[in-house]
Every structure is written in structure tokens, then in C-alpha cells.
Image (tube, rainbow, N blue to C red; front, side):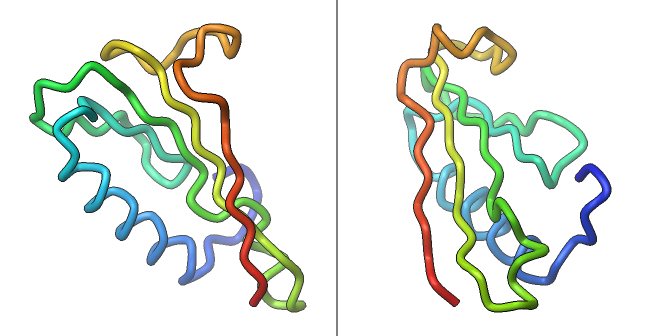
Length: 96
């Protein structure tokens, strides 16, 4: 969480995404910008998901668009080079 103030929407988005990703059998671990540690789901999946639940959350207060960034890696280790991604990073934008 670099120097950005953590918005309530950050907490909400992080909670929702962690809960839903944790229910997917294919997901073994989740790394979130909002969490200090990698979260193991307890599933026997083959993928690790890295995410920033609300990128640009400081823009929420002035009504600008923010998004969610997601990367998917094969294996339990989420700390690999970007060129080795199993799924390209995606940004889902939403207007507030």
C-alpha cells in the first residue's frame, strides 16, 4: 500500500475478490496489494493470482475512473517474471 491512503472501497474490493478467488479450485494462492502476505487458499490448484483490487483508489474521492489489475501465474510461487504469466494482466475499469 505504498503511500496511498487506504479507502473503504479498497477494503471492500479486497475482501470480495479474496473470497471469490478462494472458492475457485484452480487457485492455490492469492497475493493482494492490500495484504502483507501471500494467502494460500487451501485448494490444490495450479495457479497463483496477483492483484491490486482498486488501482488508483485515491481517485475515488474526485470521481475519476479506477480499475482492478490481475495477473495469473502457474504454480504456487507468485513472484515470477511478467513474461512468464499464464494470463495477461487485466484491468477492469469502472466509473464511480
